[in-house]
Amino acid sequence: MPKVNTKKVTWEEVENWCKKLSEIILESKWMPDIIIAISRGGYVPARLICDLLVVGELVSIQITHWPSAAQMAKEAGVKHPLQCDLSIKKALIVDDIADTGDSIIIAKDHIWTYCRPKELKVATLQWISKVSKVKPDYYAEEVKEWIWYQYPWTRLEDIVGFIRKIIEEEKEIRSWDLDIISKKIIEYYGVEFDKWYYEKALNYLTEKGFLKREEGKYIR
Ligand code: AMP
Image 1 (cartoon, protein in one colour):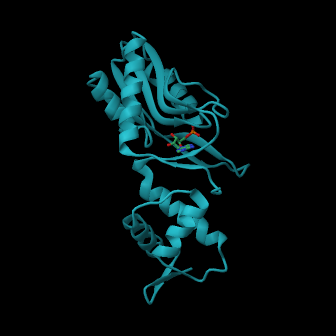
Image 2 (cartoon, helix red, strand yellow; image 1 turned 120 degrees about the horizontal axis):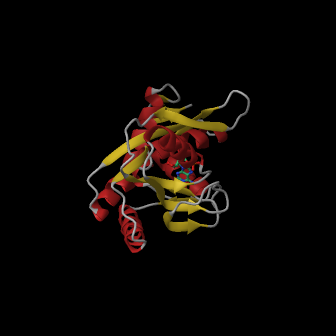
Image 3 (cartoon, protein in one colour; image 1 turned 60 degrees about the vertical axis):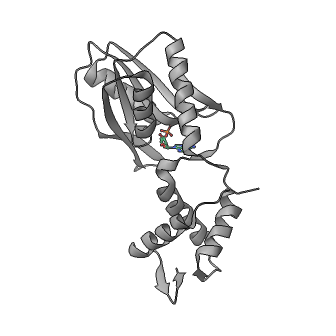
């Protein structure tokens, strides 16, 4: 059993989930005039949903999570606001996943307050029903047990995070190469990636000073 329940998502799955979402939206007889992507996770699905519903307007709002002063937990907030008048438009917020649901809550609140849409709904690829504080109006998949969805648009970013965590935990391993990294990623996350990503991730961590390069190996 891997330590972190992880699903490596393919582009084909993304396309199928977006097709499914577009069909559910069409069947509901509700059609948005404009789509609002929650950046950055919602960008790719939002663009595909625009295509599949033939919606010509796409804007975004960026929500980020940062450590709150009082707690170790991360607090979400608006990094790049959306400032436009949506009073004559029906708007659909699109994100990749509703996990805690905080991003959606903050985006909805901001959009209602500053853009005043005629109607506002939410669509996500995944909805983690056990933990999310909100239920999206439309979702392609209900997820009952928490999983980290390794979407193709965060592949390198996630692999950098995976490697950093593994190296920090495995203090007795002094030197690293692509083979050990590959084995440990399978052990921790139960998934495998193209070695191209491991090389890019190790180079990135070296540039950032987290690792050093010595005789073809990476040293912490
Ligand atoms: P939330 O906790 O619902 O505010 O999620 C914020 C963002 O973090 C999501 O839009 C995703 O981009 C990312 N994220 C949160 N949980 C997961 C997960 N279980 N798998 C993949 N990405 C996630």
